[in-house]
Length: 91
Image (cartoon, rainbow, N blue to C red; front, top):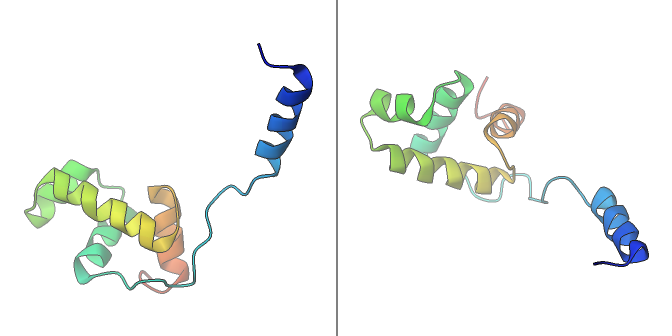
């Protein structure tokens, strides 16, 4: 059991914590392949569909998406697309 006072403090700290993680405006440029994959993400394609469209393995797509999320400082595909538009990678 955890003391109620401690539980309340943890809940308060979690609610006050930032929802994302900080990143610089453009810490590392995206590769041409990553920009290409971002465009397909924007179209709502799944990892498998992206892999089939550009003739690479699905695992490679996952690696690229992971790199994209890290470089853009976001935690999911939707935010990656929004951030890419904001930074001018996508129109």
